[in-house]
Length: 252
Image 1: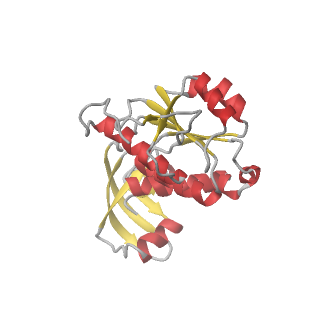
Image 2: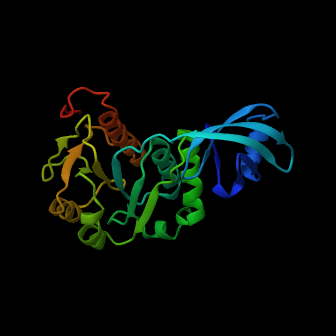
């Protein structure tokens, strides 16, 4: 845990009292003791440090100094075909840790309908995955995750107003659907759509193209969903931080 997340209701001035799983983690993993300091942040608010006033089996009592803003969001929104539940949990953690703040989970022809009834989509499960990612990335701003179980209404009715910047669709190249190499530095802001294992079907690619999507590839190697997402977000981060010269440079 790189950051202990606090609910605003746990704060009384500078004092915070923490119970439950975070207390267990602090005692058993961090070996927290009175007088030590922890990195803390209040959900939706500032980050800083806290001195441990007391810790026992019942509560972790902190004296908090919250004096800094959380790290900036990465300027990319993600449209993601709903993956298998274990992959979804990992993907949400990675996205939250990397600073993505807008995620639309959508249905596609290759998405198993049973995924939509999974416990991984329960609000508590999504929140737990996002909070784990925020703690990893020392962030406090919870990403907005929306569910869209019908592909066509999403692309035609929701996506035009939801999309920010250029829309990119990451999909393996084919004879019918050639792909440009994905820019090594994505423009800011950008929206990226990632399909299921096996990719989007032709009819879905046609609808995305009609919505203004640019088809891009990530090279000759087939990638798992969570790998492709991480690569794409990394290219958005490169654009946001200016760490790569020449924003129009092309990658593999």
